[in-house]
Amino acid sequence: MKLIILDHYSQASEWAAKYIRNRIIQFNPGPEKYFTLGLPTGSTPLGCYKKLIEYYKNGDLSFKYVKTFNMDEYVGLPRDHPESYHSFMWNNFFKHIDIHPENTHILDGNAVNLQAECDAFEEKIKAAGGIELFVGGIGPDGHIAFNEPGSSLVSRTRVKTLAMDTILANARFFDGELTKVPTMALTVGVGTVMDAREVMILITGAHKAFALYKAIEEGVNHMWTVSAFQQHPRTVFVCDEDATLELKVKTVKYFKAPNFRRLGYLYILERAGKQSVTLSPHKNLQEGHKQSNHRLISSSIIRVKNKRF
Image 1: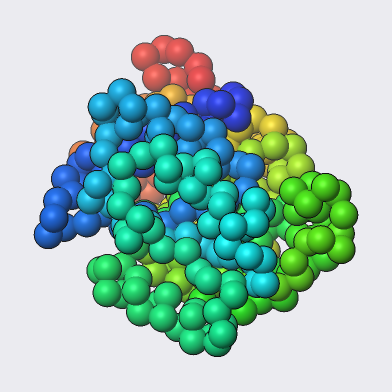
Image 2: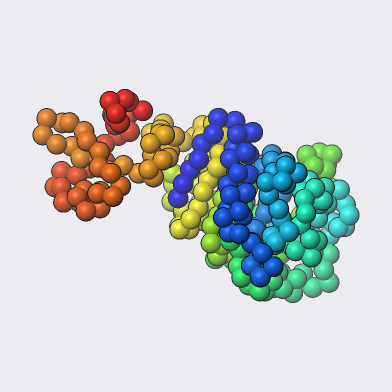
């Protein structure tokens, strides 16, 4: 698990967009090999989408051989409604890039048989070879997609009743009127997202600080469904400073330390005289575990090249 902490929302958005851009370019998609990308809606990913559009317009990125699968859609809201997730994705992203409409997949909240629609969505993901990178956001209560508190952590795409906290949070998109907010949605399951080869979760703003704390510092809990991604082998949490307000200082220092970012980790050995030395990542597994006094020393006293960080 990685936690990337940037100073501001704009920096977090740019970091996420660059990560997506680089993953697509490195994948080198083509007619016989599409890059599959899971995408969220809501206000958090808007900055990321704007940067991706910028990369496309500058000629740095193409979505011609990218297939997308969106996380969710409201039930009963017309597709052309300004607050439907179909409208959101086309107005804020798809119509500004070179993706083919047939390569965009969004659940149909007006399907005659909603569960059949959900089952078909899962099959489309399988037919595409699975999701290479699933990007997600969370609510203040730690839900990812519309997997509300109490959802199964092995759930698949299904119909879900929205929690009151979610309805209250989304009322701002419906003129602040709760009666206009849909009470049900179609959503990918936690298990669906966990099946992706890599997951990147965007968390910004002080109002989501407690959810980030639950996701990072506490154990896996179905009441905070984002916490399930502690167990994914390739999860990247991307956040701004405001979202770290509930984290312990030592947690923030650990993930923000420049050398930890570059090397991934440092093994510290405390020798006689309490002198701290570091081993290179190539040696640590061979030598570090041979030391009986091997232990990790707080980042507040680690020195690299005679400098504190």
